[in-house]
Length: 173
Image (cartoon, rainbow, N blue to C red; front, side, top):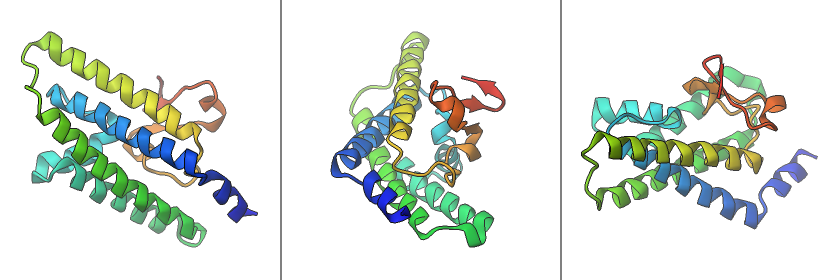
């Protein structure tokens, strides 16, 4: 029965939509980072690696996602399901999308005025938030086992999620 659920989730059209969403998410992250005013909570772990080690953002994302899957294994132990390892594929794709998005934004001059920096930040956060909602609504990854968002200060309450609300550090967004 569980295999049937996974097979249903992995329809080609849903996978294409998910990968397109990862690319848009990466573009939103790159926009907010290009503003030089910080990063979104989704990219806070890789951004920390980027700042402290100088690693490129895509590689830092892959390392962060791999660390989170390892942490899931250590926490869940016997309840760790092998299909959770599919999150590694998502981590690699997301890392490469971050590299590509960073390259795209490097082709343009960095915003210099505070107004343009705020515009980049707002665009980045809007794109990130809408893509988190859209990609989570695809239900490709079982959120019961996903620590990727909750470890960064945000958790998704499945009952509240249908109303598109996220709980971040105790605050409703």
